Length: 118
Image (cartoon, rainbow, N blue to C red; front, side, top):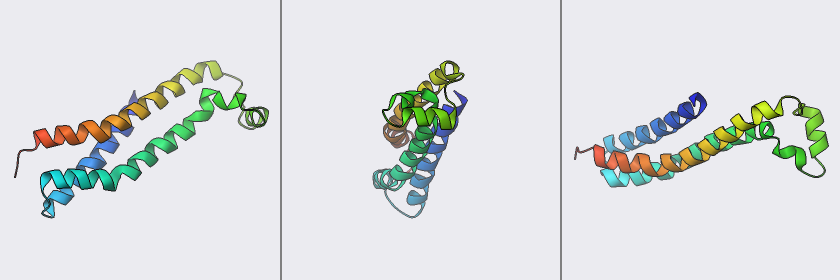
């Protein structure tokens, strides 16, 4: 929960900060929301992708890939304790993917309703 909350809040702060900067420069609210989504899409996806790729070895999914599975297991030693770490990694990966979609959809919608200044 702490990992997910930290990354999701960071992504939301980056998006809202960009919207506020664009609004201060004189852009209309809806235009600023759309432009901030375009500008911050890549950083938000990169944050999610790097975390997901970093957690992928903990899931044990790469152990079953033909050709690299045994080598991967030997390099990273993922055999011992995998049953304890895998559920956490899978949960964080699923939470990140879903929260990334929510960050890109829900945060702009909530911002458009909550910010009433013209």
